[in-house]
Image (cartoon, rainbow, N blue to C red; front, side):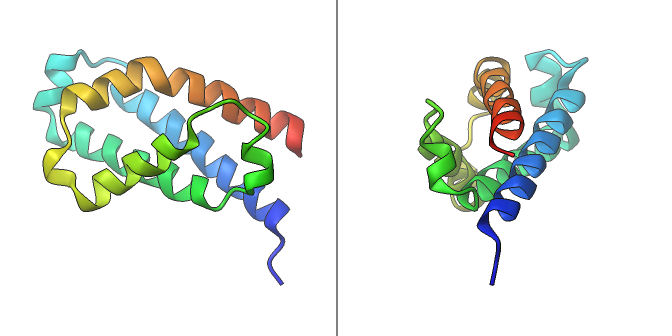
Length: 115
């Protein structure tokens, strides 16, 4: 039988690594350079897919303890995977700059407090 607690821990670590990767990929980028560099924005979108997939496997009992719109994380993953043709790079950039730091903070808190 699968241990949901251990699985949640591993998935949160995957999210932590994906966030670190995104931040590493864009550390020297401006929006203009990001939008022109297909390799970077493709890598970033892949890491967002990892985040969205991983969050699906984290125990809901753990997620509800933290005030964050988890459905947006899953929805963004679904958009990247299934509706990639409507993804706007300016929106991705805004998510990186405004939402990702908060998500990182919450994931770090979860890893520290829940395990």
